[in-house]
Length: 503
Ligand code: ZN
Ligand code: MN
Image (cartoon, rainbow, N blue to C red):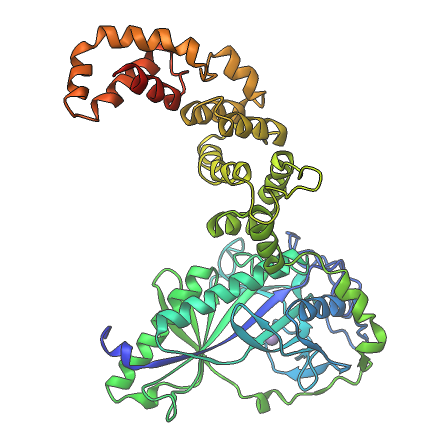
């Protein structure tokens, strides 16, 4: 691949993302919408099997979910909307057309993760084709296909972004995969879709084009699909851009055609699947079996908006303002709702309310205790949990107690880590463990003085070295004293005493 040349080319990316909606029933019939159904062709009826005379009925919940997504991204909700027939012939589409939306999508505009959104429309999913050969049916020697209609007619929401131009393919790939990640989070937060990419509940397609001069000529758009992870989104875009540039450089620009290419995960390359139809080929027209929709009348949009849960962006801002923790920590909580809930419990226990008329040390800047708690959660606690299969959910009260002990200098950071490793397995009181195992730090100068004097007497040589100007010698004395107290002496207090006594 021609690394150097890629710097001379601009990359344009537009995304199309399909997401299966999490509804009880399908889009136009009362069949169950169950993505986990393992028995083929069980959730089917004359409507989703396209039997003659069967009539579709709009699933209002599905429409409402598209509206909720639209409101969450600050988009316009169309007043008038309708369904169209998208005609094409393929065995996974029993009617010979897919009910989709063409001119009048439910949602127009909006913004997310730095990309402008063109529209979001609603349609029905297709059946699943399984291409096999001999498996389970030895009498069939040749390759054959089976069709499972459980997915046919499941509500499918399609988001289309505007095309965005980038200086490099790396930047384009990063923005695209980040957008997909943010969109998945949003769908999960508002409970519109599980949006699991491996399960095909969210399918990302990228339209890619390159140009050496953005004001002049762009190559044809190539649609890249079969992107089963955020990593694949990035890799496929980078691969496709390099493939296009190589053809461009070799003067084979005419070989870059409007087509659909699938990303081959094993070979890490894109492969031509079919030449793309233009929208005229689909002969869209309004579906006469379905009523037109007046969305501003059918829904109380203000109420729908108010009932939206906290969105990822709002949660980021709240965590920053309320807890003052690091951005990296915030991202961990944004992506792990359970952990976030638990962290908030801990933070509420550690949060000290302002004294009457005083200013809170917590809200606004985030208290030191909460920051310390977050540090231990994101590094030590998650680290231990990862390698301890027997780890159990830890009571927020016990964890908060541990943080109180370390921030009030009652235990050392070493002891904190040790106790944490214990309570992750055996949820128990850290204070009780610290007392039993003699881990409470000795902060009392009177109590420590005798031990310091003893160590000084035993190590006259080291004292002399320190006096001779070797500052480091002091630390070796500190180490000996801490060892003498089984690790319970507070190093700060020990240093203070040593400096006082060596005069
Ligand atoms: Zn059905
Ligand atoms: Mn579609």
